[in-house]
Image 1 (cartoon, rainbow, N blue to C red):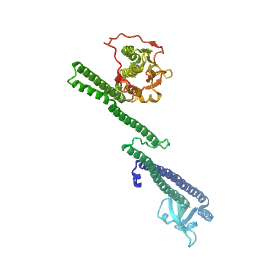
Image 2: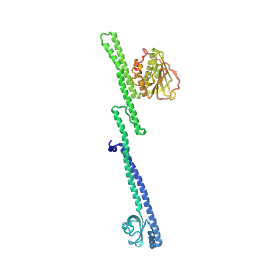
Image 3: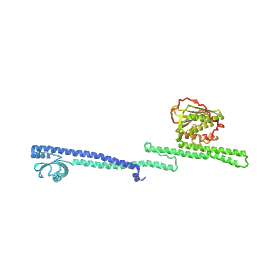
Image 4: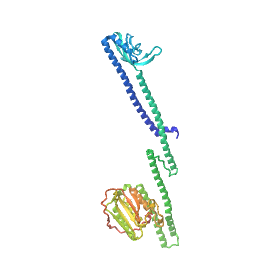
Length: 490
């Protein structure tokens, strides 16, 4: 940036505005000092003159004109005298330390006069300022009593000069400080702009340096870095989603194409053709289910259902899940337990909460071996009284290093690659948790996995009385619902 560009910056304009305000403050302060100091000195000088005039007037009353003349002669003879005296009759000086009546006061009738007079010996005279009070006496006599004001004027001049120099110095340092501040701010902003340009060119790993001063620019840099990290995560997530869709959906699409192509072969029997079409429909249903899960995740992450939040009883959600999945658990030889206190309420979307709970149960049933157990519990936290929904299984569990990663889309562990699934179940649970401002934790159940959703507290829950919920009578399905393999997580 060129030097002249500094004067067009908002920082310099702000510094210049502050400079103007400060300069006005300095002017008012020094002006007040000048007014008080010079005014006080002028007032003191005038009071001294009045006192002398009053004293001479008393002497004139007691001793007459000749007594007044002698007093003026005596006072005028004092060395270093700052007072000025002149007694004259019809313009002729009679006594005093002034050689003549001031020309400035000859034609004026004012009592107070400002004038100039000469002081010194012949050849070395100095013109000095004075201020005096003139009194008209009988018989053509006139009396002038004043004081030399050179020192007072010198003080006033010094204060005025100081005021001008103070303004000049204030202006100089104000402009210099504004330029210095602007250049420093511009340097830091240029770093932010340069980093932004590098990011826009495609380098998402760039971050804005933080100096550690804990000032507003550091706060701005920290917030921008957090925003950039979030953008980078979203971009990486989008790339991973695109890669995973291309990788994970290519196989079922190829299978679907092959089955439809096989159904077109004329040598196949009617039964084989029907089986091929049914298998193709199942593949298509799996693909539709995958895309529906992606849409649900997107809606949950964008808060599309946030307006439909209401108080939901987690115990009722768990009861419905029990009625739905108990037959499937019995078919797989797994013990499915549901325990919860009554009326544990959260604020949320009932259908999304039910879908998240169903995904957790499906994931647990899918990886729990024959003869194992899955426990779904609703309760409140011991320390913070937050409503919680947990699902515990007795399967192989998830290694600690992978527990954070399995919450992303299309993530499947290596041991799960040979089992059906799309890796969207836990990512949907995580999206629903974020929408409800809840936290999801995956822990080692020794053996198995313990998945817990912890929700913000809405109201105080009932006492922690754990009881097995009674079964409600619902219309029985034609057959037990199968485990939805395409909705599972890992």
